Structures are given as C-alpha cells and as structure tokens.
Length: 123
Image (cartoon, rainbow, N blue to C red; front, side, top):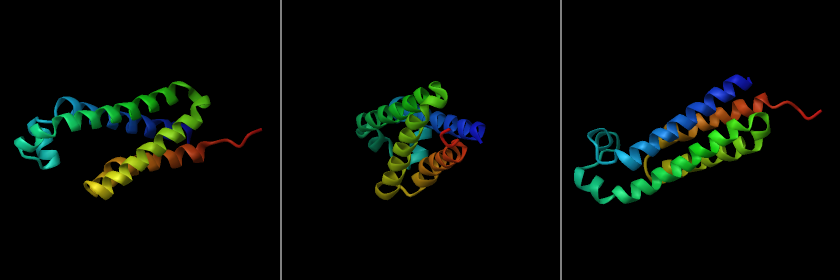
C-alpha cells in the first residue's frame, strides 16, 4: 500500500505543478482560455490573480515533494499537505467550479486514504 500512496502523492504533486505552470505562465494561452471558459479580456484582467494562485499551488507541490523526500519520517507532512489540497479543492468547488472537487480534492483524498491505510501501528 505504501507504493500506491507514494504514486498517488506524486500524481497530486505533478497536478499542482501543472496548475502552477498554467496559472503563472500560460493563463492567457488558448488552452487556458478553453479550460477555464474565459475570454481573452478576462484572462488578461485576472492574470496577476491567477499567478498568485499558481504560486500557492507551487507551495502545495513543494510541500508534497518535501514530505516525499523525508520518506517514512514525512508521514505528518504528507497528511498535512494532502489535507491542504483537499481543503483547497473543496473550497474551490464551493466558490468557483464544482469540477474542482474531482480534479483536485478527489485525487488528494485517495492519496490520503492510501497513505493512512499504509500506516503501520507504532511498535
């Protein structure tokens, strides 16, 4: 189960690196316009806000990477950062677009469940 948890955490991490790139560097690209249903004018007007949001996604990815680098000692950090991703996904689903629940919160929830299931009881 540890391998499954690690793979799921890496997928969540990679997704958030993708969000960082999309929001910080490609917000006004045709792909982002289509993905978020934006007009070019709205994308241009919200570019700075999106970059800020992308930076936060980068912090989540960095935290997950740090937790993975700590190996078994990073259990609490993994739980914390996956929890942050879940909360952000739920908040985004409630305030922006319900599909954020599937794209962001669900993968992190699955990773957290796999992580908790792989936890060995203390000796």
